Amino acid sequence: MSPRVAGSHPVHAGCRFRLSDLTVAVLGAGKIGSIMASSFSSCGMHVIATARSRERIERLRMQGFEATSDNAYAVRKASAVFIAVKPYQYPALARQIEGHVAGKPVVSVMAGIPLRLLRKTLPGAEVYRAMPNLNAAVKRSATGLVAPPGAQYKELVKSILSCMGRVYELPEQLIDAWTAVAGSGPAIIAEFIDSMILAALAVGIPRDLAYDAVLESIIGTAEYLRARPVHPAQLRDEVTTPGGTTITALKIIEGKGMKSALIDAVEKATARAARLAREIEAMLEETAGDPQGGGGQP
Ligand SMILES: NC(=O)c1ccc[n+]([C@@H]2O[C@H](COP(=O)([O-])OP(=O)(O)OC[C@H]3O[C@@H](n4cnc5c(N)ncnc54)[C@H](OP(=O)(O)O)[C@@H]3O)[C@@H](O)[C@H]2O)c1
Image 1 (cartoon, protein in one colour):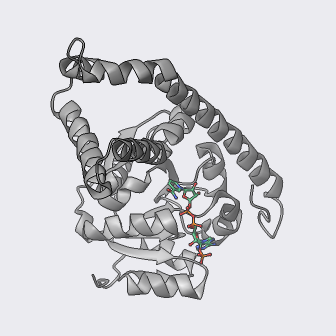
Image 2 (cartoon, rainbow, N blue to C red):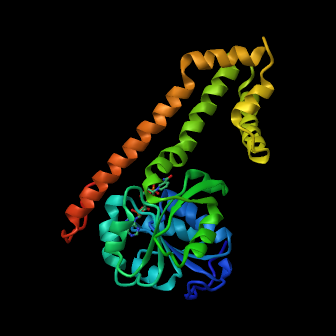
């Protein structure tokens, strides 16, 4: 994967576009940002990735991206801009790019920073919020997208985000819930997979076979439900023979409260995301006039 010569093709709202004609900037190509950069690059886009440290910039170059610490340059060259720094790092970044974003779509994947604050700090930009998840690394992200009212670049932004997986449009008030369900989802599901593997070991299945049995069953069940959109309870009933093994297992799960534990977990995670968002917002409002721009990590 070698970077093509950067061309700053201006993309006009409403015009047809080809992803391979685009230059996009990923500002803050750390964990999620470098996954985004790889996904966009695999769709043929020219990616300018930014970071602060020389080591990370070097690593990004080794991955085949054009990489720099000059955020203003990346924004000037790009048709669409993605911000993937930590929220507390945003005030300093905003000051570097605020004069270059007018008229461009700018998509923040930062947790907790509302459109209102993005709009205020990036005058003239068309700002969006997106919440991808780790599964973007295998093009299976379930990405939530919050578009501004009257968005002109929405189709462009959706097409670019689709390089990471599926994109679902949301009202902004659901972004904390999305963060809990889809953002934390891979961790919750990984925990479930781990539990099932331990269960398989407990009944004598060797580790490598246990891993395959569990992963294939999970992928297969998800694909079955996607292909035949029946309610999960219907699938469960199809497998549950009277007096059989499945009902024996289900009775234990029901007794131990797996469903209520998961509902509780997601409700608490949503509340935590909302609380973090309020903390981040308060910190950003507080540091708005601070020339150092947001010192502490929330
Ligand atoms: N991780 C996830 O699964 C995930 C999913 C969805 C959304 N998010 C959101 O994505 C954001 C980043 O999370 P992360 O886990 O990817 O963090 P991370 O690994 O720490 O990445 C942040 C990157 O931003 C760079 N950076 C900081 N300030 C910069 C500046 N002024 N100019 C250029 N680059 C700058 C850092 O560069 P250096 O390394 O050189 O310091 C670092 O590489 C967070 O806001 C988080 O809410 C994360």
